[in-house]
Length: 235
Image 1 (tube, rainbow, N blue to C red):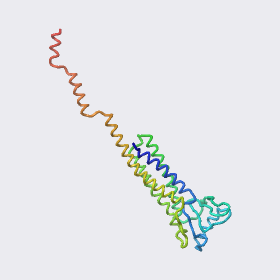
Image 2 (cartoon, helix red, strand yellow; image 1 turned 180 degrees about the vertical axis):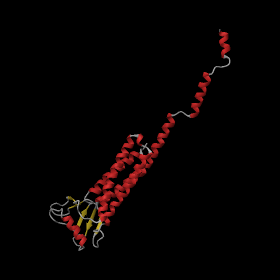
Image 3 (cartoon, rainbow, N blue to C red; image 1 turned 45 degrees about the vertical axis):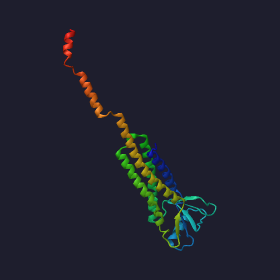
Image 4 (spheres, helix red, strand yellow; image 1 turned 90 degrees about the vertical axis):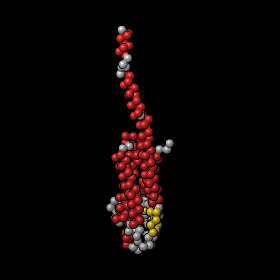
């Protein structure tokens, strides 16, 4: 018999890996048109990226993540560089970073709780289940809100195109995994409760049988009217 709770845990493990690579990698989105733009905000964004590039080179197409970006040219092509904590990003970019961090933390928290729930039947209580559902909702929305990165100032500039890269695709996979895990968890909890109910019915005797057994025991203990006469004749 398929255990839906275990399948939900496996999906969450896969989703947490996807979310981890998506939200901490350097290829969440791909920006094109950087060098050809004269917008001051874009120039500032390019200058920000150049602070961490040893060869001080930025191409017209650039891969950028929530917390890092990838060098696309020069001897360090393919190398990821972390942004400085004091980097001045737009509010949407900062919001995407915060939601990405919460998404990752909640993913692993749900995975650990579900793993404990599978191993310990006593953990399958109402408060635990409600807390897990709450984490599911928080994680789902936080993972979705990381797409606010596409609402950042640099992406809203004329002549600049921002598209999904590997990280953005992985985040979509994480959201889908989470949605499927929610459905499987609901089915798994129902499956566990039904199984627990069957076990209780098998272990506990039926009420009618118990009543009949008590009546038989009571009749056996009460003496019959003929019993004193038989005892007198025997004497």
